[in-house]
Length: 106
Image (cartoon, rainbow, N blue to C red; front, side):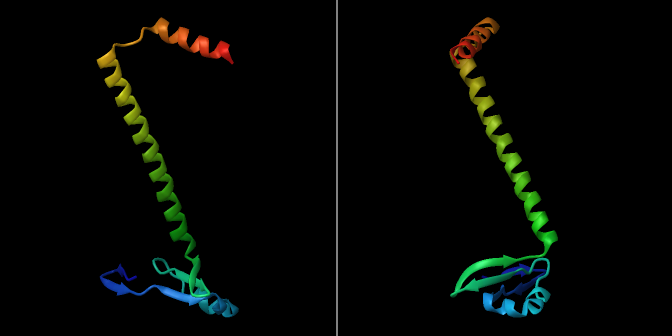
């Protein structure tokens, strides 16, 4: 698993978890764009990354979640518009009666 960084290939920094006995050396090898992957019994277990990089990834994930919710809403609105055009629109009074009936059923 190579990663392209500034036009050079960088091998991932993988270390056994036992290297944490000398945690200072492990932490010194962490940099933006170069996390340290810790293994336990030969399998990936933990990642140590720069806090600024983690915050950036979190912000990207939050923006993605927001865009996904917006897209779902737009799709639902479009489906409602199509339904109204094909099957006819409900009157204001029909909508009020529907929601009053639902509220009274509770």
